[in-house]
Image 1 (cartoon, rainbow, N blue to C red):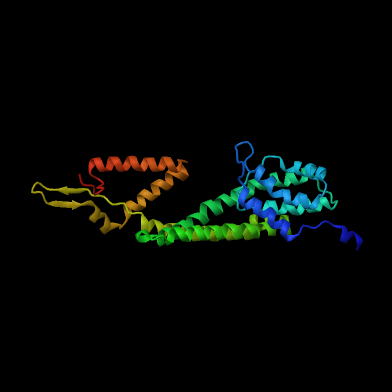
Image 2 (tube, one colour):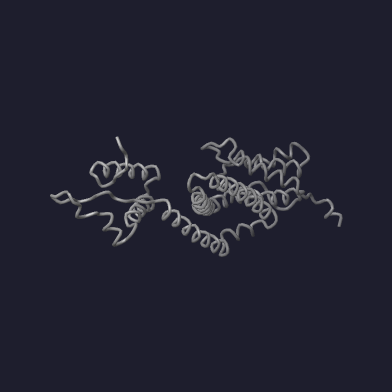
Length: 281
């Protein structure tokens, strides 16, 4: 009973302060050499001050967090929560040292980065942007407001949930993200994301041709766009979309180069009369 009373325990206020430092400062002093190292150290300072009253002990403990660290900032929150739990166990005399903590961080930052980049940057953000674009029809500011508010709420409360979940369950929280349940959730979100992006494509992308063939009497005998619409409406839009997909996924062309290629194709298309930008001079 006496040993239980003497155990060091992190309170909710300290954990919240640590989380806020990561949320606002994960990319503090970001550089190619250190990446998120300093942001991680800043988030651990409230934890170390609470667990180690002596300054020398704090300096010794923080050495475990000077190593290189970089992962997805949102899902990486769970690693910070797990670290707080491990640091608490170390302060209470369990067989955990700085090397063990650093090995955990190094082992998790790669898998979490892969999951986070595909789930957040590749799925969630396109979904939110797709919805926002639909709400911005006619120049309405509601789309921008929706995106800003929804992203802030999802980012804050999502990261807060992962931080405290990591602190409470330790490596079990990571098992959820990389296990069968996490894979099922990511697949479901990916399907929804594909539907939203497909809807945005149909609503916002419209590629048509102005090419017409005329006879000797000046009458049009072939309107290429009308003929294509009678066979497959929107086929040029589909072709351009698949072409961009092929460039970026199969040929590994960057988004910037893909846009430059489209600009070049458009320029040549206007010169030969295939496209009509509708400009008057």
